[in-house]
Image (cartoon, rainbow, N blue to C red; front, side, top):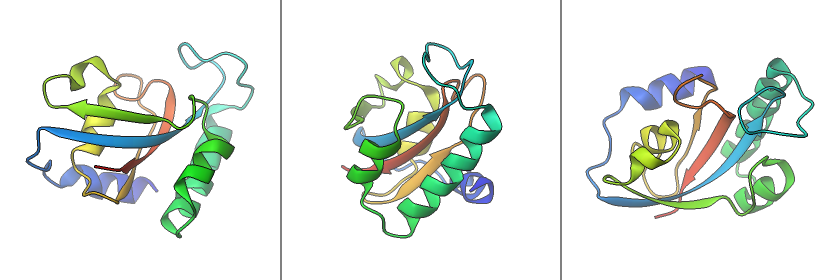
Length: 124
């Protein structure tokens, strides 16, 4: 998962103004604005790797969102180039590099992805 994330971030962003993404948030205890989460950061990473593998293996993304996300399902967000600064940085960083239908992952980062791991699928 880490190698795939690094390879994705090496790609240029798609030259589009607006996208729509769906994501699965795998959070951990102590992440900002997350309550009721008991898993450790290491447990969250292991779960993110499992869910990412399921998604990449053809698992139904909507079902995975409902089963695993620590955000509100369905976890669908529109993003524009102008408005992306108002969202989690990793949404735009990953989302604008994906082609429609592709799945990527944003690993935990204190600045770009402070809530945990985001498994992201570009819908539009």
